[in-house]
Length: 270
Ligand code: CTP
Image (cartoon, rainbow, N blue to C red; front, side, top):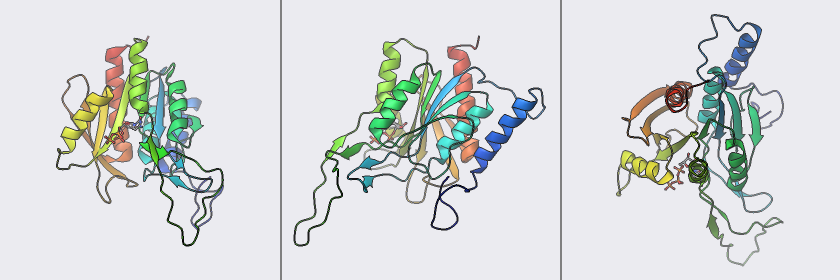
């Protein structure tokens, strides 16, 4: 399903290369576990929850507040996690691409829906990766009917309220349960008069309390919807920053690799 070559959408759309690759690898692995194509499976037996895409915050039945997230990085992460042998719970907000075959798919629309899905999926997950672009605000009132313009009247004023910080809530719950779950955040940052990208990212890592923060620099034409990415992985536990660049699949592989290493330190596979 999805947008076709023309303006229409429906079944028949060619899946993303990552999705085709993950499905092919799953078939190869299932038919012959000892095939030389099947590499090591450092995440075998692990469950990873990954959120991806951008939330949509309804204003009325036809309008919403959204963002430019394509979901490509989240899909690449899911494909890399599947490839590493993990069971993947994939929480998909709005995406321009399809979820890879082989994930346990949960589709969500808004930040509040994503929050419920993430808190539920996190239970029993070894790792939670919040790659979704969660809207910080939603309209305070959602109209049941389409808001009409009335000629001669002022345009309506939309009041916003803040959405819950899902990543922070996951960390608080994890800590309350004294669990060894790894929690990874993503941050798209721009420098401004208050600090550069790394300064903002370091402050965010502290505020969120997650184990790793994958940071990319955004600006017009950078990151959103692009196929290439360049990130810095910051550690909440004092390890030196690590950079990774290349296609979103390369970046995903580096992040999943780092997670495998962290996981084997925190809780060796039994
Ligand atoms: N995030 C979340 N819940 C929110 C907002 C963000 O879980 N309400 C998560 C994102 O999925 C991401 C991380 O927090 O993993 C950082 O997202 P970002 O939008 O950069 O953070 P904000 O908290 O919105 O920070 P700011 O607005 O100050 O940049």
